[in-house]
Image 1: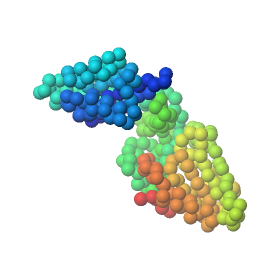
Image 2: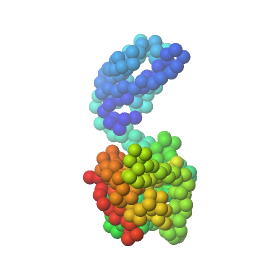
Image 3: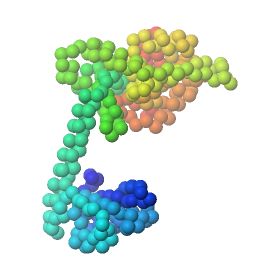
Image 4: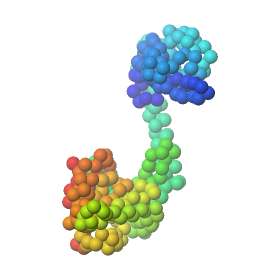
Length: 300
């Protein structure tokens, strides 16, 4: 159900040529002809006919006017609804109940998702920017600075949810449950290396540009490879430069090249023009040298 309870969502199940599809529209919940408004939208947008409708579901019980319309237009269709329609003076109370039910359903779904992630997820290192919009949350998580005050690595159990999204349960101080952060980080790093894919690139038309390395993995958070022990040294040998430029356009991708290579402007632009929404990690450009990791730029 839409969280705006003043809008009633109506779902029409359509059957055409032995195939079934769903069409969704909404209308003002209080309207005497809400279902009719929704049907007119569906009919226009889907070129549907009343005979195509085999079932319909309304979040709110229809008015008597709409019920008469449903029985006339869709006499053989199965019809269901969630919330009872109140009397003229009962809408505010009904809306309050509906909002509470929707909120509780959302919390229950979130709890199921967290349980799924906890059961099926893998422990991974997660990069955090000091400028992250979630920065205050980091205060409750055990973490290690990669760039003091600017870039950190924490831990989370990560898995794909039943809805196909990536779910994360961040490891809190209490979540260590007596284990040492360093030991859990070792486990997370080992998990991260599984499925890590390293692709070397060069430009045949311009060999003087040097080498470009792109890291991805079969799971999320390839950019967390920045926290791997000896990572800079291994990449430096591949690109032929001790000093590296690293771009994190989004948490699942890490791009590296020699700091003075011909690829450097492209790596920088991959960060500054990244469309990725900031979360734990914001798109960041870094330099990796024997002296350590430094932040060169962050996408504003």
